[in-house]
Image (cartoon, rainbow, N blue to C red; front, side, top):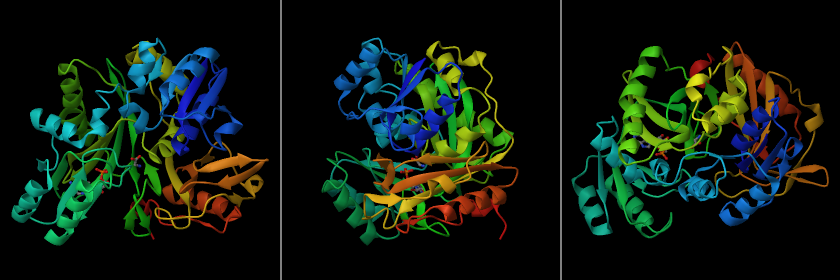
Length: 421
Ligand code: AMP
Ligand code: GLY
């Protein structure tokens, strides 16, 4: 089979890598891909906004299935566009993608189906928002309604911080704002929970804990994710049942009652408080770096899983996982998530110890004249499998020390909650 993957991050390299191990794979295309994907796939430099050009390329190359990595093309309707032209796609349609594309869509669904989530209020202009703040208990969480690459969330300790957040959002910091969301501040521990769906049935697709803050000790600015470990230390059969029955199934029922269904990966960002799950947000894709952390644990052919979804036969396949633990550390450009230098060469890749248990997934990298350059904020992902989290982390640190790149940094404390000092 010929498969195309849309996206250019560590998640997409991990998906391409898993697919490359399948006997049924004939060729993988990454649109646009990165230096890592170019070693196992053909990178195609096309803009993800231009659905027509993507379609023409897929048609010309007779690609059998298109897998969508990031949220933006999903929210913009790439699945609907390609399916109308009879292309097979793995990913949710435009309506279902509202689960990530519009926070108020998800909140209203939670309300209608009694899905546990933070109490919330929605305002449509500055004036109502300021009134809301005056009456609200703090801390409070304030969110832009639209996609904001994980940045449109403010945790405000007092009214002054809340006024600032409302002004920034309505002044257009995250694009045109028609609505703003206020949420009760939840305490507890976060967990990333994944399922895969073919539109008819669902299967678990693992759990992970992501470290979103830039500095050690989970402090500093929010990022896309500095590292993760899988499985989450919180998951148990009992909690799994609660998540499925109280959150995932009612959501899928809600979509069904709107006349649609969910196909693809679904990522529930949860807060676990006293063994009870609360939905913080949905993402309509795999997480990044959760995908790079979870996929190495998969013991079933990923292509067979995608094929079973294409034929709505997911219920006929068994998804197997290794019992080993997985840990991923993200190597970033110094300065991320703020300003950082680009186009810096990284060397010594040939010294890395990569094998069936130690993996390297590229993200913001570019290959030029056989040299690898850092061009993004999150640059490389190192994943290791082991019976022990601490050993996995040590393996990664050993590899990281071999690379030559003085403009990079990483958190040394990934998975600190499951690794004794
Ligand atoms: P989101 O983009 O909605 O995932 O929010 C980013 C991060 O903000 C989450 O991963 C949480 O750490 C935090 N957060 C969001 N909503 C809440 C909430 N209601 N209570 C506490 N923390 C939250
Ligand atoms: N790791 C968080 C995300 O993918 O949104």
